[in-house]
Length: 189
Image (cartoon, rainbow, N blue to C red):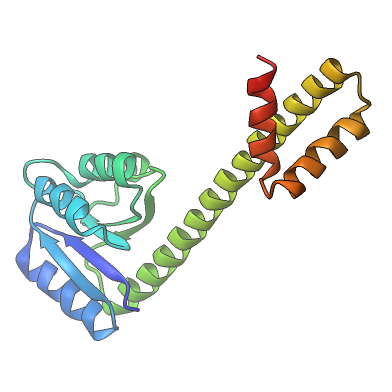
């Protein structure tokens, strides 16, 4: 499946050149914006895999637009700009900004930067998913431990016996341990 890219660049000739280069390399350019406001709007509308964002644009500049998009959509952004001054580089150090290219941008620079940016974005997405799953597992484990403790207190059971009772109940009723734990917690409130 083709990776989907949004281009936000106020200079139409540069925008057209970027689009042609990306499409020549198998990417799908889903939309183009000439200012920061439009970039935000199109990012919400299309939810691309990557956004190429110029810094200096009318209305909202690219860094501010990147902040808004990053905080609400968590989309990866590759900055493209004519500015290499320290202040711009520092402002571009946002979680969702995965690269910084200084104009003029050639095909030789653009394609590797896009490929690396997409790879890093995929990697970050996988890590976030793993973290979310780990947190869910911890919460489930806490629930089971809390219910087990309540069973131990209420029925004077050892930890092993309380766990066995919960596990047996889970298996015989074909329920998850978390569901059994929730029932136990509700019944002893």
